[in-house]
Amino acid sequence: MKITKRITTIFRSRANAAVDKFEDPALAMDYSYEKQLQALHEVRRGIADVATSRARLEHQANELHGAMARLHGQAQQALSLNREDLARAALARRADIGSQLADIVVQRDSLLAQETRLTVGLGQLQTRVEAFRAKAQTIKASYSAAEAQSRIGESLGGLSSEMAAVGDAMRRAEDHAGRMQARSAALEELFASGVLADPSRPMQDPLERQLNQLAADQAVELELARLKEERQITEG
Image 1 (cartoon, one colour):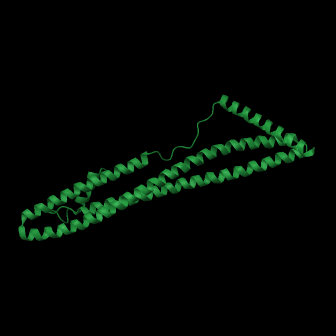
Image 2 (spheres, one colour):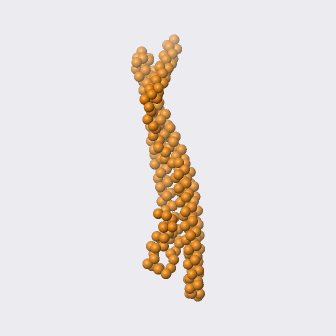
Image 3 (cartoon, helix red, strand yellow):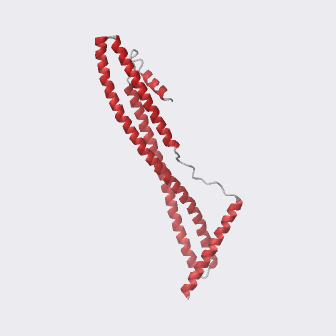
């Protein structure tokens, strides 16, 4: 719903109670402030969701780190028992887990960057909302004083004073519409700045997957040779 339509809806909501009066702009400002508080709540909830996903990936990364350490120890133990086949299998499994770990670290870092951007945006939005609230309180106080003066003027001056109050109310409503439009633009800029990118990766083609497997096998063989050399040095 456009801002002008929202203001029109608020004005019409009490038309039956005061057909011959313009609605108090304070109601429109209160409505805007409530919607801004809701926006703050949504941003906080989004940050919490991103942080939860990041923590889950962090936990998975820690588990994979532990698994890699265990497999390294198993490879050493297998070599000490002259079971080169088991050592090779452990190292191959370790290399596979290392690839998974690299993917998780990339996704975790992406979520961390998103969380940081959202947190900064939340602080900026909080500042704007507080500034709006302070300004709204000032405007409402000014309006209350103007309304009291208007009533006195109406009782003393008649129709001319009433028309002046109507003009003031329309000006304040227009000013408030401008503030609401600026606030909406700020929120759109916040969420359009790049948030919640899809962390999924495209599927590798068969050739790339085969080359990656060959590289992983070569790494396993190099690691196995290194372990043999360490063992010969130790035994010697």
